[in-house]
Length: 322
Image 1 (cartoon, helix red, strand yellow):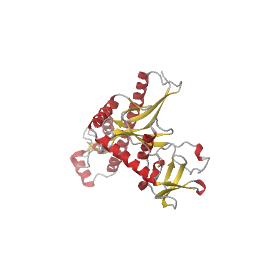
Image 2 (spheres, helix red, strand yellow; image 1 turned 90 degrees about the vertical axis):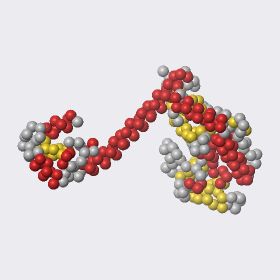
Image 3 (cartoon, one colour; image 1 turned 135 degrees about the vertical axis):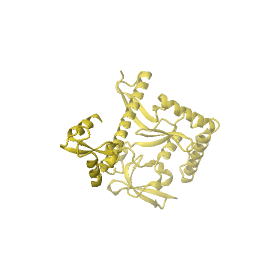
Image 4 (tube, one colour; image 1 turned 120 degrees about the horizontal axis):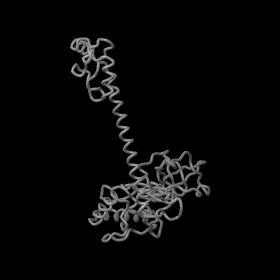
Protein backbone atom coordinates (compact mmCIF):
# COMPACT_ATOMS: atom_id res chain seq x y z
CA UNK A 1 0.00 0.00 0.00
CA UNK A 2 1.33 3.39 -1.00
CA UNK A 3 2.02 6.00 1.63
CA UNK A 4 0.59 9.10 0.05
CA UNK A 5 -0.34 12.65 0.95
CA UNK A 6 -3.55 14.05 -0.50
CA UNK A 7 -3.99 17.83 -0.47
CA UNK A 8 -7.17 19.72 -1.30
CA UNK A 9 -6.36 22.54 -3.71
CA UNK A 10 -9.79 23.88 -4.58
CA UNK A 11 -13.20 23.27 -6.10
CA UNK A 12 -14.70 22.60 -9.50
CA UNK A 13 -17.75 24.66 -10.45
CA UNK A 14 -20.04 25.63 -13.31
CA UNK A 15 -20.33 29.32 -14.04
CA UNK A 16 -23.66 30.94 -14.86
CA UNK A 17 -22.53 31.43 -18.45
CA UNK A 18 -21.87 27.69 -18.89
CA UNK A 19 -18.13 27.70 -18.21
CA UNK A 20 -16.49 24.86 -16.29
CA UNK A 21 -13.67 26.20 -14.09
CA UNK A 22 -11.83 25.35 -10.92
CA UNK A 23 -10.53 27.72 -8.27
CA UNK A 24 -7.29 26.55 -6.66
CA UNK A 25 -4.95 28.07 -4.08
CA UNK A 26 -1.27 27.22 -4.56
CA UNK A 27 2.14 28.14 -3.22
CA UNK A 28 3.72 27.49 -6.60
CA UNK A 29 2.44 28.78 -9.93
CA UNK A 30 0.39 26.29 -11.99
CA UNK A 31 2.03 24.69 -15.05
CA UNK A 32 0.44 26.96 -17.62
CA UNK A 33 1.59 29.33 -20.34
CA UNK A 34 2.40 32.76 -18.89
CA UNK A 35 -0.53 34.68 -20.38
CA UNK A 36 -3.01 32.00 -19.26
CA UNK A 37 -1.53 31.94 -15.76
CA UNK A 38 -1.65 35.72 -15.48
CA UNK A 39 -5.28 35.89 -16.59
CA UNK A 40 -6.23 33.04 -14.24
CA UNK A 41 -4.65 34.87 -11.30
CA UNK A 42 -6.48 38.03 -12.27
CA UNK A 43 -9.87 36.30 -12.62
CA UNK A 44 -9.56 34.84 -9.11
CA UNK A 45 -8.34 38.06 -7.54
CA UNK A 46 -10.35 40.35 -5.33
CA UNK A 47 -12.20 43.11 -7.13
CA UNK A 48 -11.05 46.42 -5.61
CA UNK A 49 -14.72 47.38 -5.33
CA UNK A 50 -15.16 44.54 -2.82
CA UNK A 51 -12.34 45.73 -0.57
CA UNK A 52 -12.97 47.75 2.58
CA UNK A 53 -10.31 50.06 3.96
CA UNK A 54 -8.49 48.16 6.69
CA UNK A 55 -8.93 44.71 5.09
CA UNK A 56 -5.98 42.33 5.16
CA UNK A 57 -4.73 41.51 1.65
CA UNK A 58 -1.87 39.47 0.24
CA UNK A 59 0.40 40.86 -2.46
CA UNK A 60 1.76 38.00 -4.56
CA UNK A 61 5.36 39.25 -4.30
CA UNK A 62 5.45 41.14 -1.00
CA UNK A 63 3.09 39.35 1.38
CA UNK A 64 0.51 40.57 3.87
CA UNK A 65 -0.60 44.19 4.05
CA UNK A 66 -3.62 46.30 4.90
CA UNK A 67 -5.67 47.91 2.16
CA UNK A 68 -5.81 51.71 2.58
CA UNK A 69 -7.97 52.65 -0.37
CA UNK A 70 -7.54 54.00 -3.91
CA UNK A 71 -5.13 56.88 -4.42
CA UNK A 72 -4.13 59.14 -7.29
CA UNK A 73 -0.34 59.12 -7.70
CA UNK A 74 1.40 61.85 -9.66
CA UNK A 75 3.51 59.56 -11.86
CA UNK A 76 0.62 57.16 -12.62
CA UNK A 77 -2.08 57.72 -15.23
CA UNK A 78 -4.82 56.08 -13.16
CA UNK A 79 -5.70 55.13 -9.61
CA UNK A 80 -3.56 52.87 -7.44
CA UNK A 81 -4.36 50.51 -4.58
CA UNK A 82 -2.54 51.74 -1.49
CA UNK A 83 -1.14 48.91 0.65
CA UNK A 84 0.31 49.42 4.12
CA UNK A 85 3.02 47.00 5.28
CA UNK A 86 4.93 46.78 8.57
CA UNK A 87 6.75 49.87 9.85
CA UNK A 88 4.26 52.02 7.92
CA UNK A 89 5.85 51.08 4.57
CA UNK A 90 3.56 51.83 1.61
CA UNK A 91 3.18 50.21 -1.80
CA UNK A 92 1.01 51.65 -4.58
CA UNK A 93 -0.29 49.05 -7.03
CA UNK A 94 -1.76 50.36 -10.31
CA UNK A 95 -5.35 49.28 -10.78
CA UNK A 96 -4.47 47.46 -13.99
CA UNK A 97 -2.20 45.20 -11.90
CA UNK A 98 -4.75 44.48 -9.17
CA UNK A 99 -4.51 40.79 -10.08
CA UNK A 100 -1.42 40.67 -7.85
CA UNK A 101 -3.53 41.49 -4.78
CA UNK A 102 -5.88 39.00 -3.14
CA UNK A 103 -7.80 38.67 0.10
CA UNK A 104 -6.61 35.74 2.24
CA UNK A 105 -8.91 32.75 1.78
CA UNK A 106 -7.11 29.94 3.60
CA UNK A 107 -6.94 29.82 7.41
CA UNK A 108 -3.43 28.38 7.15
CA UNK A 109 -2.12 31.78 6.13
CA UNK A 110 -4.70 34.22 7.43
CA UNK A 111 -2.44 37.03 8.63
CA UNK A 112 -1.88 37.93 12.22
CA UNK A 113 0.49 40.77 11.45
CA UNK A 114 1.82 42.72 8.51
CA UNK A 115 4.84 41.68 6.47
CA UNK A 116 7.90 43.80 5.98
CA UNK A 117 8.17 45.47 2.59
CA UNK A 118 11.66 45.01 1.23
CA UNK A 119 14.31 42.36 0.71
CA UNK A 120 13.20 40.20 3.64
CA UNK A 121 9.63 39.89 2.37
CA UNK A 122 10.81 38.46 -0.94
CA UNK A 123 12.08 35.34 0.89
CA UNK A 124 8.52 34.30 1.73
CA UNK A 125 6.21 32.32 -0.50
CA UNK A 126 2.60 33.45 -0.50
CA UNK A 127 -0.23 31.31 -1.90
CA UNK A 128 -1.95 32.58 -4.99
CA UNK A 129 -5.54 31.79 -5.98
CA UNK A 130 -6.17 30.97 -9.65
CA UNK A 131 -9.36 30.51 -11.65
CA UNK A 132 -8.56 27.94 -14.34
CA UNK A 133 -10.50 26.53 -17.26
CA UNK A 134 -10.82 22.79 -16.67
CA UNK A 135 -10.97 21.29 -20.16
CA UNK A 136 -7.48 20.42 -21.49
CA UNK A 137 -7.71 22.45 -24.73
CA UNK A 138 -9.85 25.28 -23.35
CA UNK A 139 -7.17 27.87 -24.08
CA UNK A 140 -6.93 26.90 -27.77
CA UNK A 141 -10.43 25.72 -28.57
CA UNK A 142 -11.30 24.76 -32.16
CA UNK A 143 -13.21 27.56 -33.82
CA UNK A 144 -12.34 30.07 -31.07
CA UNK A 145 -8.61 30.45 -31.60
CA UNK A 146 -5.75 30.80 -29.18
CA UNK A 147 -5.95 32.59 -25.86
CA UNK A 148 -4.69 36.22 -26.11
CA UNK A 149 -0.97 36.66 -25.50
CA UNK A 150 0.38 39.16 -22.98
CA UNK A 151 1.25 42.51 -24.57
CA UNK A 152 4.93 43.24 -25.16
CA UNK A 153 4.54 46.68 -23.57
CA UNK A 154 3.38 47.01 -19.97
CA UNK A 155 1.41 50.24 -20.29
CA UNK A 156 -1.97 50.58 -18.63
CA UNK A 157 -3.69 50.94 -22.01
CA UNK A 158 -2.09 47.78 -23.43
CA UNK A 159 -2.82 45.80 -20.26
CA UNK A 160 -6.46 46.88 -20.18
CA UNK A 161 -6.87 46.00 -23.86
CA UNK A 162 -5.40 42.55 -23.18
CA UNK A 163 -7.79 42.02 -20.26
CA UNK A 164 -10.74 42.89 -22.49
CA UNK A 165 -9.51 40.41 -25.11
CA UNK A 166 -9.22 37.70 -22.42
CA UNK A 167 -12.79 38.30 -21.29
CA UNK A 168 -14.05 38.21 -24.89
CA UNK A 169 -12.23 34.90 -25.45
CA UNK A 170 -13.77 33.40 -22.32
CA UNK A 171 -17.27 34.60 -23.25
CA UNK A 172 -16.97 33.13 -26.75
CA UNK A 173 -15.59 29.86 -25.35
CA UNK A 174 -18.39 29.38 -22.83
CA UNK A 175 -21.02 30.13 -25.47
CA UNK A 176 -19.59 27.57 -27.90
CA UNK A 177 -21.90 24.51 -28.26
CA UNK A 178 -19.08 21.97 -28.58
CA UNK A 179 -17.41 23.41 -25.46
CA UNK A 180 -20.66 23.23 -23.48
CA UNK A 181 -21.14 19.58 -24.44
CA UNK A 182 -17.55 18.70 -23.57
CA UNK A 183 -17.82 20.55 -20.25
CA UNK A 184 -21.00 18.65 -19.33
CA UNK A 185 -19.43 15.30 -20.26
CA UNK A 186 -16.31 16.05 -18.21
CA UNK A 187 -18.39 17.08 -15.21
CA UNK A 188 -20.38 13.84 -15.37
CA UNK A 189 -17.21 11.75 -15.71
CA UNK A 190 -15.55 13.34 -12.69
CA UNK A 191 -18.66 12.62 -10.60
CA UNK A 192 -18.11 8.90 -11.27
CA UNK A 193 -14.33 8.52 -11.58
CA UNK A 194 -11.33 10.78 -10.76
CA UNK A 195 -10.20 12.75 -13.81
CA UNK A 196 -6.75 14.23 -14.51
CA UNK A 197 -6.41 18.01 -14.37
CA UNK A 198 -2.92 19.42 -15.10
CA UNK A 199 -0.70 17.87 -12.39
CA UNK A 200 -3.70 17.13 -10.16
CA UNK A 201 -6.94 15.18 -10.01
CA UNK A 202 -10.56 16.23 -9.79
CA UNK A 203 -13.26 14.02 -8.29
CA UNK A 204 -16.80 14.97 -7.25
CA UNK A 205 -15.96 18.66 -7.72
CA UNK A 206 -12.88 18.51 -5.46
CA UNK A 207 -9.43 19.33 -6.89
CA UNK A 208 -6.66 17.26 -5.26
CA UNK A 209 -2.92 16.81 -5.37
CA UNK A 210 -1.68 13.26 -4.73
CA UNK A 211 1.94 12.96 -3.59
CA UNK A 212 3.92 9.92 -2.55
CA UNK A 213 5.78 10.25 0.75
CA UNK A 214 8.02 7.29 -0.12
CA UNK A 215 9.49 8.26 -3.47
CA UNK A 216 9.13 10.69 -6.32
CA UNK A 217 6.75 8.28 -8.07
CA UNK A 218 3.12 8.36 -6.96
CA UNK A 219 3.00 4.71 -7.95
CA UNK A 220 0.26 2.49 -9.27
CA UNK A 221 -2.48 4.47 -11.06
CA UNK A 222 -5.30 2.16 -9.97
CA UNK A 223 -4.21 2.39 -6.34
CA UNK A 224 -3.97 6.18 -6.57
CA UNK A 225 -7.51 6.38 -7.93
CA UNK A 226 -8.78 4.23 -5.06
CA UNK A 227 -7.02 6.46 -2.54
CA UNK A 228 -8.64 9.55 -4.11
CA UNK A 229 -12.08 7.95 -3.93
CA UNK A 230 -11.53 6.88 -0.35
CA UNK A 231 -10.43 10.37 0.67
CA UNK A 232 -13.32 12.20 -1.00
CA UNK A 233 -16.07 9.77 0.01
CA UNK A 234 -14.89 9.70 3.62
CA UNK A 235 -14.85 13.47 3.67
CA UNK A 236 -18.37 13.63 2.23
CA UNK A 237 -19.61 11.19 4.87
CA UNK A 238 -18.01 13.25 7.60
CA UNK A 239 -19.64 16.44 6.30
CA UNK A 240 -23.00 14.67 6.03
CA UNK A 241 -22.74 13.44 9.63
CA UNK A 242 -21.94 16.97 10.79
CA UNK A 243 -24.87 18.34 8.79
CA UNK A 244 -27.29 15.86 10.39
CA UNK A 245 -25.90 16.56 13.84
CA UNK A 246 -26.32 20.30 13.36
CA UNK A 247 -29.90 19.80 12.14
CA UNK A 248 -30.64 17.63 15.16
CA UNK A 249 -29.20 20.19 17.55
CA UNK A 250 -31.13 23.01 15.89
CA UNK A 251 -34.38 21.04 16.01
CA UNK A 252 -33.73 20.00 19.60
CA UNK A 253 -33.29 23.63 20.55
CA UNK A 254 -36.64 24.50 18.98
CA UNK A 255 -38.42 21.55 20.60
CA UNK A 256 -36.77 22.09 23.95
CA UNK A 257 -38.32 25.53 24.11
CA UNK A 258 -41.71 23.94 23.47
CA UNK A 259 -41.27 21.52 26.40
CA UNK A 260 -40.95 24.46 28.76
CA UNK A 261 -44.57 25.43 28.13
CA UNK A 262 -46.58 24.09 31.11
CA UNK A 263 -49.74 22.04 30.67
CA UNK A 264 -52.67 24.46 31.16
CA UNK A 265 -54.44 24.03 34.48
CA UNK A 266 -57.78 23.49 32.75
CA UNK A 267 -56.29 20.59 30.75
CA UNK A 268 -54.77 19.03 33.88
CA UNK A 269 -58.12 19.19 35.67
CA UNK A 270 -59.99 17.69 32.71
CA UNK A 271 -57.49 14.79 32.35
CA UNK A 272 -57.57 14.11 36.12
CA UNK A 273 -61.36 13.84 36.08
CA UNK A 274 -61.48 11.85 32.84
CA UNK A 275 -58.91 9.29 34.05
CA UNK A 276 -60.53 9.18 37.51
CA UNK A 277 -57.36 10.18 39.31
CA UNK A 278 -55.57 6.89 38.64
CA UNK A 279 -53.05 5.32 36.26
CA UNK A 280 -54.92 4.25 33.14
CA UNK A 281 -52.69 1.17 32.82
CA UNK A 282 -52.39 -0.32 36.31
CA UNK A 283 -54.99 1.67 38.26
CA UNK A 284 -52.47 2.94 40.82
CA UNK A 285 -53.20 6.19 42.60
CA UNK A 286 -49.60 6.68 43.78
CA UNK A 287 -46.92 8.89 42.20
CA UNK A 288 -49.13 9.91 39.26
CA UNK A 289 -47.78 11.90 36.34
CA UNK A 290 -49.29 13.69 33.37
CA UNK A 291 -47.92 11.86 30.33
CA UNK A 292 -47.89 13.05 26.72
CA UNK A 293 -49.12 10.23 24.47
CA UNK A 294 -47.18 11.73 21.57
CA UNK A 295 -44.02 13.29 23.03
CA UNK A 296 -43.51 17.01 22.56
CA UNK A 297 -40.23 16.29 20.72
CA UNK A 298 -42.22 14.23 18.20
CA UNK A 299 -44.74 17.00 17.60
CA UNK A 300 -47.21 16.27 20.39
CA UNK A 301 -49.30 19.00 22.00
CA UNK A 302 -50.60 20.01 25.44
CA UNK A 303 -54.21 19.16 24.58
CA UNK A 304 -56.56 16.82 26.51
CA UNK A 305 -56.46 14.23 23.71
CA UNK A 306 -52.67 13.96 23.95
CA UNK A 307 -52.34 13.77 27.77
CA UNK A 308 -53.06 10.85 30.09
CA UNK A 309 -52.44 9.85 33.69
CA UNK A 310 -49.74 7.26 34.34
CA UNK A 311 -47.98 6.25 37.50
CA UNK A 312 -44.22 6.77 37.59
CA UNK A 313 -43.52 3.06 37.00
CA UNK A 314 -45.80 2.74 33.95
CA UNK A 315 -44.54 6.02 32.56
CA UNK A 316 -40.90 4.89 32.79
CA UNK A 317 -41.83 1.56 31.24
CA UNK A 318 -43.48 3.36 28.34
CA UNK A 319 -40.47 5.64 27.83
CA UNK A 320 -38.11 2.70 27.53
CA UNK A 321 -40.13 1.25 24.65
CA UNK A 322 -40.36 4.46 22.57
